[in-house]
Length: 94
Image (cartoon, rainbow, N blue to C red; front, side, top):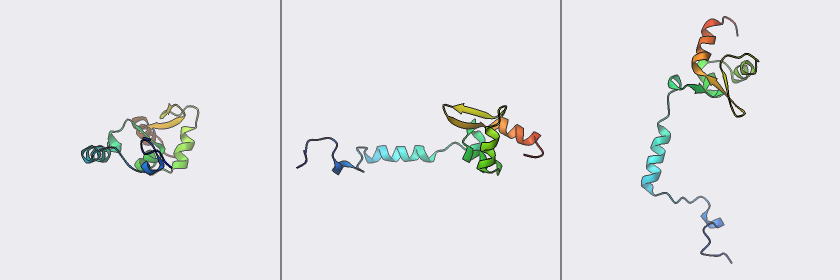
């Protein structure tokens, strides 16, 4: 038999304690994303979409020892957008 007073039971899975007003404001914040051209750093996926260069190619470029547009946040690799744009404008072949 389950304890009716227990705060977390298997019956609570999927339920939320947020009121409808709080859920509404949370979903609005999630919809208001910063456009890629205004971000300082991009994920590899965002950089691929932004530049039309493949994810694997961008990842290979980020692994180069003197890559001017890589930013490590812990173990995560991010792309510095401005430096990435300048790099693409300078290069003829990638």
